[in-house]
Image 1 (cartoon, rainbow, N blue to C red):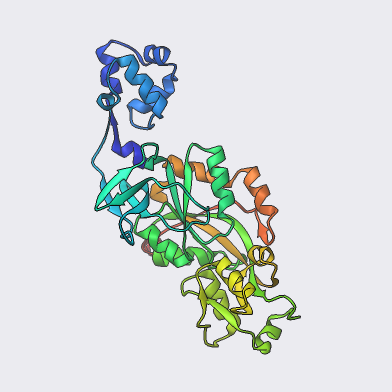
Image 2 (image 1 turned 45 degrees about the horizontal axis):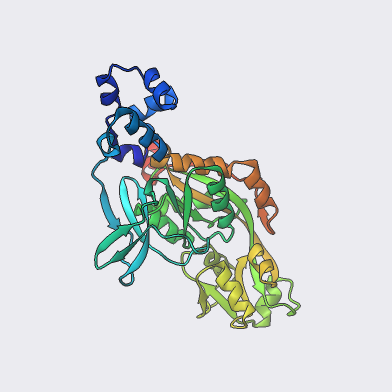
Length: 362
């Protein structure tokens, strides 16, 4: 059962039976399908605003008399930096989560409300049940968010986080899905191993793409091999521990000390190199080409979204899987430098380490 249906209670069946109407009778009076009315009555479907207003009009009652929200835990994902502060809101695993607005890879995303002096004021048009929240470092995540908004009745919000940080947010119940790229595409099981280590719950990994990760370089250095880069003494920009890029950087530097200058994401690395703060850093081919930098590929990585098995029936999650598996999305990915979208939508089940141990002993 989805978050919305678990918290959304209705008296449609009670009102219908008091009038002696069948579901077909109500269907003819409202213009809603009989199957839709049945799904609403048994709690498998949350009606749209139009459907709720139509039902209340036919029954001659208020929407509030027909539909009520059950009790719901409300909490901040983390405290807002100051007051007043704008927030986004979303329902995850039966909890009403408030996210302080932050810079987004999707640009200026409309906020859902504002917090001032411990008072929350929601925008009337916002709907936390129709928001999917993803933590990801994918610089092309905007393409997925745009397709998600175009094809589905939901919206996607994205928190820019490294792979391990994303998984920790998933474990804390803040997001619906976490992006990670901590494995070579030839050995993609590495992503599953990290999921078992951090998230520890049954889940599915959905492949978004295989992408090229490597060294972004200041143009004109005439370096075309990793060995040549290491011998040249270039100034590096690093990435924070827990990120996929940091993992690659540690492999490339072969035990040398990590750079003191660090960037928060792939585009931050490219900006540092382009601005002259550094001459080399680990980033994606896509980002390097966007910034006009030279690029030496180190490896092709498997980029996955981790989705808890507990969210499998959530319509927002089902819609996400359908979009990723669509031909239109795969086509767009294949047109990006360094992205292989043919694998988009491939699903792999990941069980907890404890479940795997039980399986080995049985």
